[in-house]
Image (cartoon, rainbow, N blue to C red; front, side, top):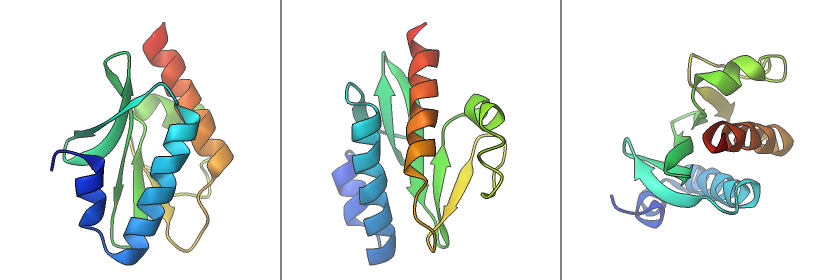
Length: 113
């Protein structure tokens, strides 16, 4: 896949809807970032570095902001399954818009210093 449009076109309806919402949210959170496909997942990058990746799974949207934000936002992430570099947003819950924007802002700061 070459573009996020190509990637999203292959998704089931529920996954497609959530992926499109995440895509729009990331555009709002990082207006200077560019879209890319990295590790076969949609991603946004700025200053030549990937900020975050995302990928729909069967029961959740995987959000991959790298390990640092998961540590920095641990208190706000308690309601979500996490691992070293991943946050899982279950499909039955609305995306935490404010938190996602804060994580993206954190990543922008990391790639611009």
